[in-house]
Image (cartoon, rainbow, N blue to C red; front, side, top):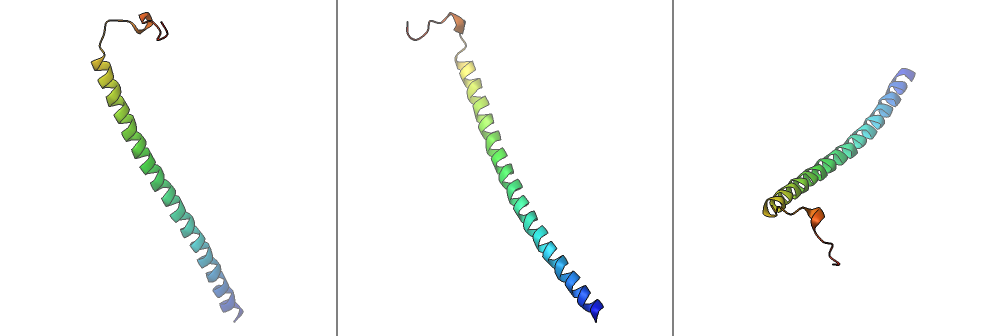
Length: 74
């Protein structure tokens, strides 16, 4: 009967460990999902900034060198 008791105890310990592993897995999955969403937002923001920079560059095609411009306090 000691063997049955030991097996039962071992099974309980394994189930407890599995529960901890599942909880850690769920937490890590949430973190990865959140990071993926954050990365998508950052990618969209970067794309938007690149488009705005291109528009500004295309719209402000001037022959004047920015170094030749007078500072605003003049």
